[in-house]
Amino acid sequence: LSEWHTEPFGGEIKNGRLYGRGSTDMKGGNMASYLVVKSLIDSGISLNNDIIFQSVVEEERGGAGTLATVLEGYKADVALIPEPTNMRIFPKQQGSAWFRITVTGKGAHGGTRYEGVSAITKATLVLAAIEKLEVERNEPLRSDPLFAKIPIPIPINVGAIRGGV
Image (cartoon, rainbow, N blue to C red; front, side):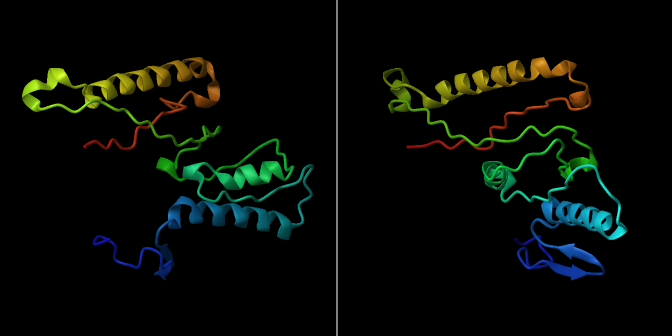
């Protein structure tokens, strides 16, 4: 928080710019999408299909908003996801899933570690298996032209490791 020059949850506008958590990801994308839809409506352009504006709540933790929309029966042929990552276009969305893995061991004195089981050593095997799974999941996508410029279309990110007694 010490690096913030504005209140992180304040949504302050200074010199025509919005500052605060989510101002780019995803408030900026949502506003851009909304303005596109509003412009189409205001212009009177007739479309062949419906446009549904749906904003995902907490998309990085499972996207329950999208699930709720699907469960309500909404369907779409196309989705526009205004994700600001590196200002790149992602023609397909890989989604996300959060999971937790617990690796246990058996404690022992450092001088007699052979009497125990190192959870850290076991965790390295789990990490290697996750990396292998990532390669296997992405291999079939190498020939997909919509993922051609994305090095890892469906990444598996191990975001944290915690250890101790």
